[in-house]
Amino acid sequence: MAVNMKGKSLISINDLSVEEIWEIFELSSSLKLKVISGEQHHLLKGKTLGMIFSKPSTRTRVSFEVGIYQLGGIGLYFGPGDLQLKRSESVPDTAKVLSRYLSGIMIRTFDHQDVVDLAKYASIPVINGLTDLLHPCQVLSDLFTILEKKRTLKGLKLAYVGDGNNMAHSLLHGCSKVGMNISIASPKDYQPQKQIVDNALKNAKSSGSKVEIVDDPAKAVKDADVIYTDVWASMGQESESEKRKKIFKDYQVNSNLVKHAKEDYIFMHCLPAHRGDEVTDEVADSPNSVIFDEAENRLHVQKAIMALLM
Ligand code: CP
Ligand code: NVA
Image 1 (cartoon, rainbow, N blue to C red):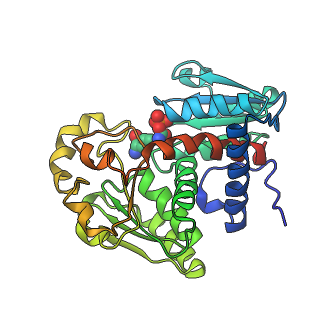
Image 2: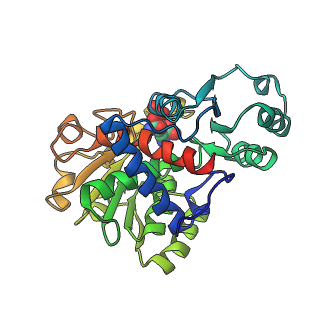
């Protein structure tokens, strides 16, 4: 039976039930087919999505704006400094005011708590388009991409090599919800936050997935079906770039490392990539790489998310 997500916000994959995740994938797949066949699908005719960006974006910005348009609605872009938030209007007041005009809000910002508060005080759905802590829309699109490529999720092994950041956190939530095994290799001081690992271990009890945090990339990648990496310095950490390059130098996904994975492994990256740092061109451009299909799926999956919530 279809689950009803109308009016809900999407802040974290950990808040979603397994049924809700599969509902998103089913609708994503049907909306993707409609785009391919050119069939109109105005599920959100006349609706408005406010898009708040305190950080830069290529994929999230374009896929949400094109997505709401294809669904028959319109997106309003608010860049860093556009709203009175920048001049310290409070998050609750902003949430209440925007709720009087819009049908939904997508927000990308630094502090995760701001997104939690926005959703708390808004009377319309709030969608997390990345915080320092989580990137749920990316990982839902990633899982959908893995499903397309591998025809299943349960029992597959995803190896994440690199910083224990927002991507690692949402991958921990996502994989452990759908029954995928996840092995994360990060340097000791850059491993995922304990609270998120605990969430994943708890999910793993019901889904049957294995969750492992190590510091040896070869160990994580051993027999992996999916190899995933992300930048070593995330948005907001630019001043640490040089220091991090040294710390993460053994965490590069290159042709040597991928030898430990299954022969038909797929390579994934949320992008933007710093080619030559966390991944070599050889891997990113190899036949195993699905990075651009992954980027495309942001559009289809976020359209499903908007259609279900708004
Ligand atoms: N992967 C991702 O969120 O990309 P952007 O930063 O370009 O939105
Ligand atoms: N960890 C990266 C992801 C970008 C999509 C960042 O937060 O900058």
